[in-house]
Length: 110
Image (tube, rainbow, N blue to C red):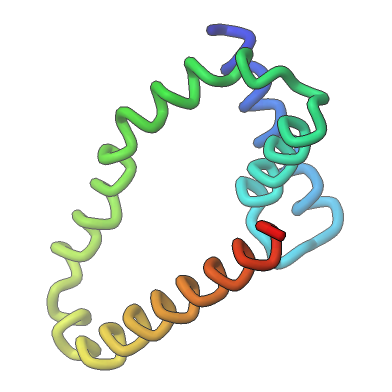
């Protein structure tokens, strides 16, 4: 279990370091997640080492939505003023994200 935490946090730290050193517009955790995916995909890291920790993170994922939800409650006035542009952006980005995901899956499934 400790090994899994160590491996996941090493990938996260690697992503942060790359983002900071290269001044990339991509967040470090995203780069770390890509590094972890690549390491698992190319069997550099064993899947069994990170599986229990990943399942644990997934089981408490709802907790990660608390800070944004509280932020929305604290800034209801601003959200009510920009409700329609926010809704439009959320709906449009969801549609685009779904389409990109579907086309990527279709391309990689061949």
